[in-house]
Image (cartoon, one colour):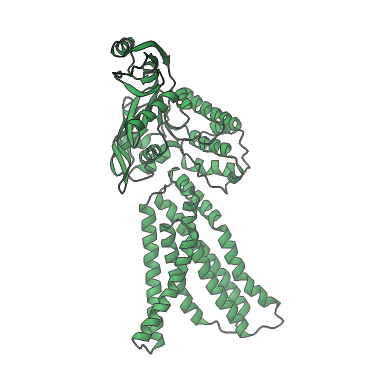
Length: 214
Length: 315
């Protein structure tokens, strides 16, 4: 059982390696650029922090949108199916890889962020408040679509536009119902994104366990 | 028999040596209105090599995928080694060697990685047999799967299906698109396994000469229905092609029983007849104006062609 899980983890890591490397490079890149600035100001740092935080979310969206469906695209999911690996173990391995990647890129981002600020500037907390529910929504929607569709492109594209659709819907509601309080709008955004992301994650996992690959 | 190979099947679904290893009861699959497999019944005993033949789109792959639990069954039941294809599919996958029509092995893996990966899931993996097959198939362990030719990929697929010494081997058109030399090597390897171990083989193929070479029994599937399920020897020993010359301006009156196909070319009347006996000729001559009658044995390939042509004409 442990050996099988290790093998599945290795396989899923290999499937996600390119996305992981690209994500880490895009996170490290802006901070490296800061290093070469003769002198950097607070807005330089905040731009890098905002960029890398959203890149973290996109990396997770790409990972979730690719990790299930990529095996269906090249039909290697069939090969895995007739090896006798249980569906629960397969999905657990994919989830573990996603959470490990998430932990890794968050660590890199936070460590670099602290190292560069070195208490010189204050990090913009608004970026975090927006990015966490957005990331949850990206990840959950891409995960669900990855479990349902047969193309990673569609899974990633439709998964990543979901938070923007929510913003658009909320903006329309604000316009038609004359909402004046912006905080009210953000609470709705955070609630809907987080709820949709978690529900999609659960639905995608449930669908994967129940479905057959052929 | 290995103690590891069949533990759960023995405990939960005991099957005696005389029971059928592969069984299908009214197995049906439909995709909306299209019936891909229609009430197929099969019972393949232990140690039997069963060849499944049929034209393209007849339902061969669908039947195999249902038996392997790779697709949902619309109605009916399929069991392999006593394990139900609906519910026990993971266990079936672990103990049955399966070679699909198109190998779907991870293309980014190296051959040695594929072997390491598959070995993890197979408790009865035989390293020596694996090495032997690697040498026989001349597979380079360091080569990436994406760099393997079609023939080499088929061999790797067969290697991972054979190396854990499965009790049941299911092959779904594994030699499709391969050249004659590789096909022969492929079939030789299967024959070797059949000879060395009491392995039950379900072999679906368009290469009917290969089926004739290795199969004890043959099944013919057409339009989703199993039209024939009989020992190859019996079929070929009782099927004959009759060439009769019709007398001037006469036409055939009565076609012998068991005629699956006939053709009239000028005065020549050619028939393929099953359940052939010496009486068939005398009855043919008595009922029709024929001058000269010749009887030939036919191969499984000829039988298949004539059967399908005959069914299409009937339709």
